[in-house]
Length: 517
Image (cartoon, rainbow, N blue to C red):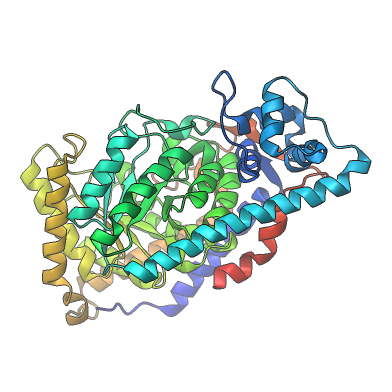
C-alpha cells in the first residue's frame, strides 16, 4: 500500500529540518553540562558513591565548581599522573582532596592519558556492540512489527522475572519503566534497586541484571531479545553511557520530550541530547523519539502535523550526532478520539504517511492511552484496531496495548493477552500491506497529503523563528517552555578555550560517516 506523495514537498521538509537543527547543534557544540562531564567520568571507569551516598561522578564534577566550562577530562587525567586510576582519584576527592587544574608542564601528558582512557572506553562500547551483532546472528530477529512490552514493578529483581516471563510469552522487546520523576534528579542512582514509584530506577547495575536475565532465556526463546530503558531527563548522556556498557538495545532518547513534558531547561536538554546520541550511535543502540506524547496534550486529529514535523527535526538532530537511520526509531501514536467518525481512516493515513516519509527508520508505534478508560473491553478492541493498523502499514516496533491501561500496572496475565492479540492480528493481517491500495484522491490519501502540507508549513515557521522561540510559543504539544526556564539551567556552561573532551575529539570527526553507515 503506497501513497502518492509530492517528492518536492518531502525534500523541502528535510531541508527545513536541517535548517531548524543547525542553530541547535551550534549551541550544543559551544556548551557543556554537568551531565556531559559526569559521562566523561563514568566512561573513564568512575563508579560507586561516597559515604553520604553521592555518586562519585557527581563528586568529581561538583569539585570543578565554576571551572565546568573547562571540562573534567584534563584535571582528572592530570591527577592520575602519580599512577592512580580515575576511580582512586574520585575516592580521594570524595575524602576531601582537591582537584586542581593541571600545571602547564602537565598538559601534554594529561591530554595523552585522557585520549588513551577515551580510546579504552570506546573499545569497550564497540565490544558490546559486536557482542550484540554476534547474538543476533546466532538467534535471529523476529518478524516486524516487534512486540514491545513494559515491566514496571519498582523492584529490579521482580522486573527481571517479569521480563523473562514476557519473553517466554512472545515479547521481542522489553522496556523497564523508570521510577516516577527519575528524569528530574540530577544524578544516576547506584546499584541494584528494590524501591521505585510506578517503575524502577535506571542504574547501571539494574541494566546489567535484566540484560543477564534476558540473555539467559534467549536460547529457549529462539530469537534475540531486546532490552530498553530511558536516556532522557537530566542525566541523558550518563544513562546512555551506562546502557552502552551493559548492551542495552533501545533507549528512549528524544530531543524535546524532557523540555515539553518534564519542564527541563531547553538549553540543557539540547546539549545533553547531542552527546547522549553520540554514545547511543556508537553503541548501536536504537533510539526512540517521543512524539507520541504530543497527542496526549493536543487533540490527535488536529496535531498530527506536529508529530510529523518533529519526526523530521528529530531525524536531522540524530543524523548530526552520528546515528544512522536504521537506529532512529521515530515515534508516533494511535491517539485520535475513537468516537470521532472516520477515526480509523485518519489513524491509517498518518501511520502510512510516516512509514513512507522515513522508510529506513525503525518506527515505534504507540498504542491508545489518552482515550482509554476503565472499560477493559473498549480498550481491548481499540488495541486490536491499533494492531491492525500497525501491521498493515509496516510499523517496526509495536508497543502493545494492555486492556488494563488506565486501571493498574499490568499483571502478567494482562501482558499475555496483549501479546496473544497482537500475534493473532499480525498473522491474520500481514498480507494486507501488499494487498491494499489507497484510492487515488480518496479520503485516506487526501488526509495524508494534508498532514504533510501542514507539517511543512510548521517546519517553515520554526525555521523562521528558531527552535527556542518555537518552544516558547508552544508550537509542539501545545506546551510552551521558556528558554531560560525549567530545571537544570544551572548545570550548563559555555565551553572555554581550555575545554577538552577526549570523547568528542574521538567521535565528532566520524559522525558524518557514521550517519551514512
